[in-house]
Length: 251
Image (cartoon, rainbow, N blue to C red):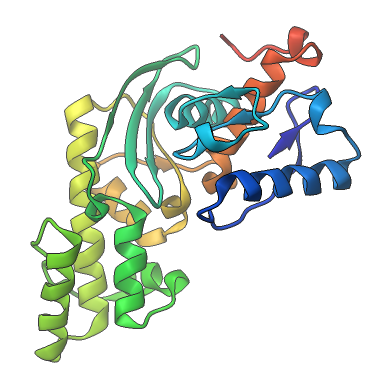
């Protein structure tokens, strides 16, 4: 993600992370620089995410928690409780009135509380990832998925299929399992309205509706929620640069 001197987005690239992050990010930077006509060495580059320390051309590394909070605050312009559910982890971040991170919590090291849980199970069921939300919402009932481990949950789902349970109720139960885990995290850290979502799973209608119903809170969604971490990192890069010296990021 790249922003101009006003903080407006001028370009972005989205790819599945590869094992060789150094090479992949270097190629992405070169492609972005070529398309936007700038020299990478002339601007600050901020890396975030689990592979941030492997991005050798980054001038700074910043946590996803800070970057997601910064990106969402700049777009929605208010405090609240941000839920970020990505492929590798889930985070609940309490954002104060000036955009600062007040508190946060993360899921334990288990895929069952992440988007990977939905992605993996959807593949096992032979359902396209874009279809699992609508099919879950359209199911008239749900089958409880009680296992707290992705591996055991998969075994549970295989057993349900063997007993001729339809896929819709299984998907609804699968979403309920994820929503229950995330809701517990939100309650643990405390809800500061409004409730906001970022990360790739925010685009899943079933997750969004079921989370709002469970927590009895309306849910706000920024444009391009899956890019909020990168947007926040780009804004921080701007604030670190001479160009961004006069740009207010509500520190």
